[in-house]
Length: 79
Image (cartoon, rainbow, N blue to C red; front, top):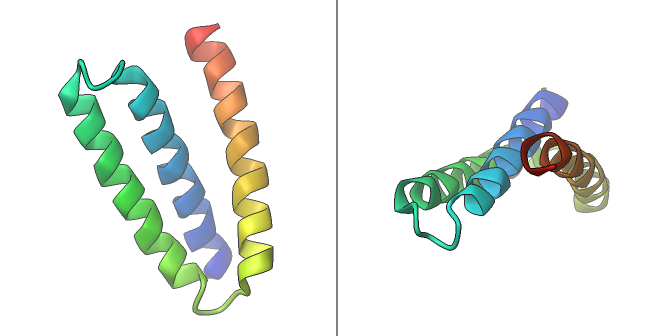
Protein backbone atom coordinates (compact mmCIF):
# COMPACT_ATOMS: atom_id res chain seq x y z
CA UNK A 1 0.00 0.00 0.00
CA UNK A 2 2.93 2.33 0.67
CA UNK A 3 4.08 2.06 -2.94
CA UNK A 4 0.62 3.04 -4.16
CA UNK A 5 0.67 6.16 -1.97
CA UNK A 6 4.20 6.89 -3.19
CA UNK A 7 2.97 6.61 -6.79
CA UNK A 8 0.18 9.11 -6.04
CA UNK A 9 2.65 11.42 -4.27
CA UNK A 10 4.94 11.40 -7.29
CA UNK A 11 2.14 12.01 -9.77
CA UNK A 12 0.67 14.89 -7.76
CA UNK A 13 4.11 16.45 -7.26
CA UNK A 14 4.88 16.26 -10.98
CA UNK A 15 1.48 17.78 -11.76
CA UNK A 16 2.14 20.61 -9.29
CA UNK A 17 5.55 21.33 -10.81
CA UNK A 18 4.14 21.44 -14.33
CA UNK A 19 1.31 23.73 -13.23
CA UNK A 20 3.81 26.04 -11.55
CA UNK A 21 5.72 26.35 -14.82
CA UNK A 22 2.48 26.87 -16.74
CA UNK A 23 1.43 29.68 -14.40
CA UNK A 24 4.17 31.81 -16.00
CA UNK A 25 5.31 33.58 -12.86
CA UNK A 26 1.78 33.67 -11.42
CA UNK A 27 0.41 35.62 -14.41
CA UNK A 28 -2.15 32.82 -14.58
CA UNK A 29 -2.89 32.74 -10.86
CA UNK A 30 -5.42 29.88 -11.08
CA UNK A 31 -2.65 27.55 -12.30
CA UNK A 32 -0.47 28.71 -9.40
CA UNK A 33 -3.27 27.96 -6.96
CA UNK A 34 -3.69 24.54 -8.56
CA UNK A 35 0.02 24.00 -8.01
CA UNK A 36 -0.33 24.78 -4.30
CA UNK A 37 -3.23 22.34 -4.07
CA UNK A 38 -1.30 19.52 -5.73
CA UNK A 39 1.84 20.18 -3.64
CA UNK A 40 -0.33 19.93 -0.52
CA UNK A 41 -1.85 16.69 -1.76
CA UNK A 42 1.62 15.30 -2.53
CA UNK A 43 2.74 16.14 1.01
CA UNK A 44 -0.27 14.34 2.43
CA UNK A 45 0.45 11.21 0.40
CA UNK A 46 4.12 11.41 1.42
CA UNK A 47 3.10 11.49 5.07
CA UNK A 48 1.20 8.23 4.59
CA UNK A 49 4.21 6.68 2.87
CA UNK A 50 6.63 7.64 5.63
CA UNK A 51 4.59 5.73 8.21
CA UNK A 52 5.81 2.45 6.69
CA UNK A 53 8.93 3.23 4.61
CA UNK A 54 12.19 4.82 5.64
CA UNK A 55 13.06 8.31 4.47
CA UNK A 56 16.10 7.34 2.40
CA UNK A 57 14.28 4.81 0.25
CA UNK A 58 11.24 7.04 -0.16
CA UNK A 59 13.24 10.10 -1.17
CA UNK A 60 15.42 8.15 -3.60
CA UNK A 61 12.39 6.77 -5.43
CA UNK A 62 10.47 10.04 -5.29
CA UNK A 63 13.30 12.20 -6.59
CA UNK A 64 14.48 9.78 -9.28
CA UNK A 65 11.07 9.02 -10.76
CA UNK A 66 9.89 12.61 -10.30
CA UNK A 67 12.84 14.12 -12.16
CA UNK A 68 12.50 11.61 -14.98
CA UNK A 69 8.77 12.30 -15.38
CA UNK A 70 9.20 16.07 -15.24
CA UNK A 71 11.95 15.95 -17.87
CA UNK A 72 9.87 13.73 -20.16
CA UNK A 73 6.74 15.84 -19.74
CA UNK A 74 8.68 19.06 -20.32
CA UNK A 75 10.03 17.74 -23.62
CA UNK A 76 6.53 16.95 -24.84
CA UNK A 77 4.79 20.07 -23.48
CA UNK A 78 7.39 22.83 -23.93
CA UNK A 79 9.78 21.19 -26.41
